[in-house]
Figure (spheres, rainbow over the protein chains, first blue to last red):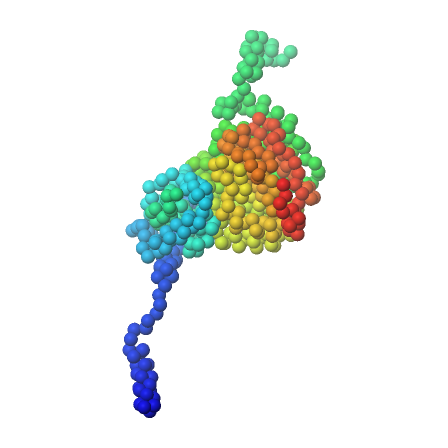
Length: 190
Length: 314
């Protein structure tokens, strides 16, 4: 009996590598990590576009002439718009990362006191008709981005920043002052 | 007998005198002539410096309207400068409300402070929520093209922060710069107050949780902030003195809800602050748009080891 069992085990062990190598490798994939990875890849692609556009316009150093600042900002924005002519909402805030980012924002708001939530919402600028590649109007304030929430969201390179406008999360190009992408209704109402 | 009294009928002089007495220039109809009358009062109430060779500066917050109140405060500040010759000005953000076209830089910054700029007074700006961060490239703001930066004057190291966007990079930079500084005085200035009794905004708790531990650990003595459109001196918090100066052009009258934080508040008119640092003492005075001194006092430098001893200061 013992001999039979030992033989069976040996057969089973011999067969194991065959069966493992024969099947597709099973790897646990964290969907959130994959979504963030996809987002980061899109951000990296955008930074390449930004840098290409940046190389096409005169470089900006400190100046006494505010006209030069305005002209440079507009030129950079225009160069980016031309390079991203077909850009659409969701190109960077890809579909798979959107629910994750919304969940992070909602979780952050849920932890805040009613006063804190109200202060954040009241501090937001008036509703803005968002479009990808639009210039962020300088007449509308850039509301403070809550520092603690910022620490929960995926890090961004210096070319980009998150902002909240009304109830929408936007991705803004800092030097070109343009809206690069957005997620509508990401912020809870109260 | 003056030229005027020889050539103007006495009745006209009488009318002029009555108008000047009973119809003082209002905020919106302010003119150069009424400014001259107002700034005399400001100079009268401005205290001169206490010591030679001290570090002297002015503090202005929420300035960039281009309106009459900003011009009036600018004129008062220039008059104060004659009595209290400060070297530079700290700007606490909202340097430019609304549009930021080239002509706005002129109307909302250069014109109101022209007398000071002409005297070579340097302005050091921080960014508010109404500011395009590209203001950092505007040379008269002395930001060296950075959203956050540091500079030293005598024994004082200043840290200008961008409180709109306190990301990990800025936090790491702040920690590194604070740790590296051996200055006796460390002063931080930025837009959003860590402590405030304002009904409109109140304390910026998110920001406070991030930067206050660094300020405490590395010996920051004083914090200047704006955002709230009034003046408030906060009772020392964890040994640090906080001042809110956000009424150099905008005013939210009656907005201070006096409570346990308030040491002194002024929310009935516009205001600006003058500061002098000499050895271990900071002397401050706050003047209103009509030139009245509304607060004054001294602050003693804080050293990190004294943190425990000063905890719970009132």
